[in-house]
Amino acid sequence: MNDVLCMLAVKNIKLNNLLILLKMKDNPLSKKSYAFALEIVKIYKEVTFREKEFVLSKQLLKAGTSIGANISEANGAISKADFSSKISIAYKESLETKYWLNLLRDADYIPSVKANGLLGLADELSKIMFSILKTTRINITN
Image (cartoon, rainbow, N blue to C red; front, side, top):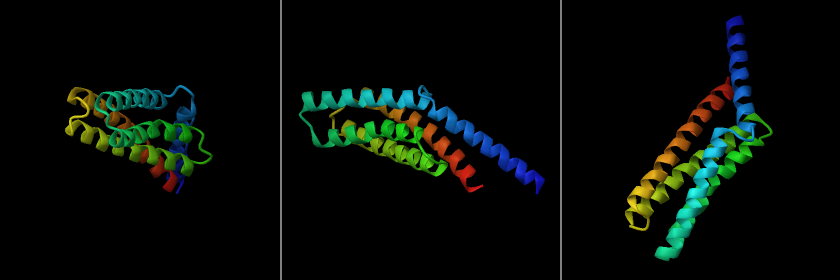
């Protein structure tokens, strides 16, 4: 029983440290998601100007910029469950963003090199968020 309590205490400390890290203004996930959002805005402007495509690119714009917005909301979470929920939404938005990037690339609206670069960045964000979700969900249930 004592071992279980110690293990739970350690997990709680790790989760609290993770929450503190993510609430810091200059955390890496916030920086990366903001930089990614800027790239999405740039590609949206390119596609709408050069290709005159407004519907699919708007979906990309919404999903791609929503990632960072939800991470920002997670940074201001009022509970562990709220934090996990916002990171989960950001993770799902990253998956949607990848869908729109693939579609716009395959429909020849975005050059493959540019789309693949953005897909790599989206994958990196997704992996970070998935890792956070695994950690927070394990610690919330224990």
